[in-house]
Structure formats: C-alpha cells, structure tokens
Length: 350
Image (cartoon, rainbow, N blue to C red):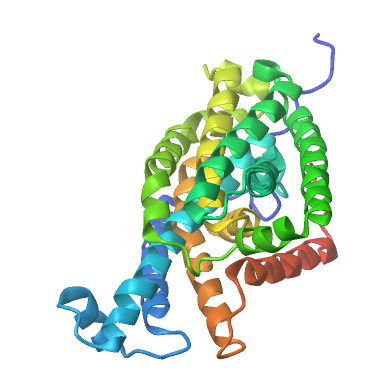
C-alpha cells in the first residue's frame, strides 16, 4: 500500500473542456483563421481616414504607382499592415507560450519584465544619451528586454526556476523598472515628451526598415516557440509527468524564456509596448483548439494578427479624422476581458 499525496491533476486552463476538439474541427479553425487574416489585411489596406476601394488597393499592389490612392496604400498602409501582422503574430505566440509555461491562464508576456526592460532602456537612451530616432530606440529596447528577461530568469532560480518564482520575480522587476521609468520622466520633462511617442504602442509612423531589422529575431523566436510545443505540452501536465515522458523540464523552460524574449523584445522594439494581445488571444482560441500547445500555438500565431489589424482599423475610424492608437484599443478590449473573467462563476485556479 503506497502512501503520500496524489499527483496534481493536469493543467486545464479555464474554458478548456474535458472533451477536446477533434483534429478535423481544429483544422477547420485554422482555415477560418487564414480567411479572417486575409479579410483583416484587406480592411487594413482599404479602410482609414480615406476609404480606398479594393480594386484600387489591388492595382496599387500589382501595378506601378500613379495616383494618390496608390501612394497611400504602398507607402503608408502596406508597411503598417506588414508590421501589424509580424507584431501581432509575435505577441499572440508569446502569450500562448507564457500561459502554458507558467500554467497561469492570466499570464501575459509582459510578466517576464520584457516590456518594462525595453521601456527602461529607451527612457535611459532618451534622457542620458540624447537618442531621438525610432531606429535608435530599437536597439536599446532589444537590449533592455533581453537584460530584464535574463534577470527575471536568474531571480526565479535560473535553470531551477518554477512558474511561481518566475511570476514573482517578473512582478518585482516590472514594479522596479516602471518606477524608474516614471521617476525619470517626471524629473526630465523633455524625456517625458519624447518617450510618450514610443510608449503609446502604435503601428502608425513606423518605418518598414524597423521591422526588417528585427525580423531575424522574430523569425527565430517563432520557430523556437513552435519547436517547443510538444515539450511545453508535457511540462503543462506537471514536472513529474513531463519527466516520465522524457521531457527535459529545465531546458524547456530556459528555451521558452529565450523564445519569449526574442518575440516580445522584437515586437516591443518596433511598436512600443502593446498589451493584452498575448492575454486575449489564447483565451479566445482555447475553446476551439483545446489546451494542447501543438494546436494552441499555431492558433495564436494566426488569430493574433487578426486582432491586431482589426484593432488598428477601429482606431482609425472611431474618431475621424484623428486616430486612436492600437495600444489604447487593445487595452480597452483587454479591460472588458478582465471584467468578463472576474464575473464568471468558475474562478481560475492558478
């Protein structure tokens, strides 16, 4: 007769039913996501302060530029759309990895201190070094994000880090770094004025060269995250189950942090901190694909840019001729999601 406590049940995020969707249903969901992404791209290219018919959008993309509408599509909306696709994919995929890694359905990619590290590095570059261009912010944001994630990983126990210790370390680093950012901005008003253009979280005014600079990092993070889908699924069952299945738990966690740093750091460097994408998308798609990361991560990578582009379009048309930045729109939608989660009878078990 054996003694001791029974093993913890497998991790089941809120909204994941015990009866998982069939592979055919999941495949249809991916196809639907592709259709929605094409529709969102079309909206992003056609809708704005000036509405452009889809036939002129197509002619602008396929032929020589000869009209004002062609110039708007090619020079303004196409770069904005491509950046939205890349950043949305990175943030959505990072959210799926983060929630699976920490076994916390309310975890956000910013929990690792990536956004706070990038913000602290950028505000330092502006105030101390006098950097004023977005191309200059880019590299400081990347370095700051990487350093913050490394510190969180070290404080969380390094290779022995646990989900709880990572969350606590990330919370502490976030509080410290954002306190530093706010203090420096209040002390130097010129820094506050310059910082707000980066920290608002927007796709507007971002040059395609910024995306090209971080594209190798985003691609590496995407491939690494997808490659970790199977071991992450084992880790989500609990350490003992994962080891019994032959998964190297410590290596999986370290590589997951590397993937999160590449994805969130690159996205934040280009657009500034954009919140809630990585929180909302895993919740939205988990009902259809289940908690298995082998399906969850591709769903997140496909549906997150849809949300990003639709949010950007909403920001363009809600108060014409002005715009609301995409970071503000996603924050509003994320707030509604939190209210919904709080009001649900079934409380999330962390």
